[in-house]
Amino acid sequence: MFVTHLLRSAQILPCITSHYMKHLPFSLCKLHFKNVAVVQQAGNSCIEKLTHSVSLYSSTSSSEESYADTDEGIDKLALIQLEYEFYKQGGLSVPKVVTEAQWQELLEKQTRNSRRKYFKFLFLNEIKKENAKKKKEERKSKVEEKRLLEESQRQSSTEKKGHLEYGLWKNSLFLRIRDSAITHFQNGRLISAMLHNQPLVVDLSFDHCMSSREKQNCSNQLQMMFAENRKHEEPFNLYFCNAHKSFDTVTKLEKYIPTLYEPEFPLNVTEQCYLDIFPREKLVYLTPDSREELTEYDHDAVYIIGGIVDTAKSDPLTLAKAKQQGIKMGKLPLDTYLRWGSGSGKNLTLNQMILIMLDMKFTGDWRKALTHVPRRKIKTEEEISFESQLRNAKRRPVRNLPKYTHTIIKRSSNSLLVLSLALLS
Image 1 (cartoon, rainbow, N blue to C red):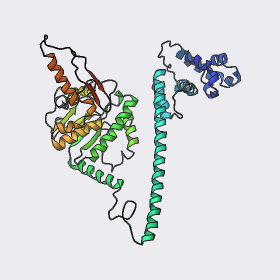
Image 2: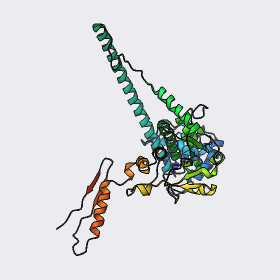
Image 3: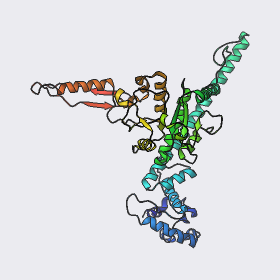
Image 4: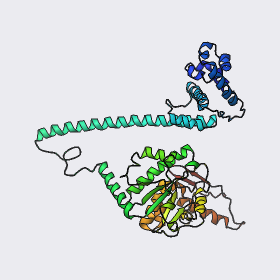
């Protein structure tokens, strides 16, 4: 049993206190610990209650056994906390601090392997934040030292020469445009778009279909989507529909944009369905599972993008919802204008989708708009020319066909290495 294995490793767990002993059966603790006095402080009532939960947990014999569900979540939480201490004392990758929301996420994990992976994920995020904080402090100190040095040099030169000097960190004829001024300008453009421009809807009703990490990625893509729309010369009137405050995606999005629900914020966030806001005949649901491709851009239509990130599975959820609601459907003409590379998926992120739609609305050229598709997903000119050479070689007569070596194509993040056909004598 896993709990028994933890207790046998007591020599490396000196930090396990009576807090964890309260949630373990008295018989196991007495069997594996010599110091029984600490264990007896747990109380017989708590021991009897938790013996049942641990016995249920121990009855699972598979390699991916999960904790048993009990009436009180503290039973399972105590075992997970003991597991966390075991990993921590064993030198495994676990975070220093686990928040209440992270404990809640761990309670939803059904296997030890998934919890171990989640602990490692939290550990890597913690290290990344610490390194970023150190780098930020170093940059800040360097900038401050440079500013003080240049300011002292400027004062000394001014005292010597007796007149003003112009340049960086010196006097200037130009006004400085701060980031806040740019933000106000872009927000003003969005307010104008809310009055006059074409609407674009993001359907956020798929919260129950995503895992916790997919919800986090979705909220990140939503805030990048808003930022890309705000920077464009002709932004959309963006609507986030079916955005219930109880959804984890919306909660995480509010952490990225704290002013999301303020009345002056230039974004339409509503719990209403798009059918209650726009006429049904104008709605067009963009789904990759549709059979009809968009040939022309309709400036009078209200396009809908499904706010979902499905990395593990690709069920046609948006297609099913559009059919159920009787809405027109369409998909981007990706296969018509692009040649996809082998092994690359055709999934696009939400911020890539809005960049494509913005450029298509502004230019009317699909080739121009589809340049926002990542280049790693598309075949290069070397691959296309190589495939044509290979096809031509296969069409030659059998008698005159020379022997060719196998072609090896190696991909890397920086370059594509193509070993051309080598003729053998």
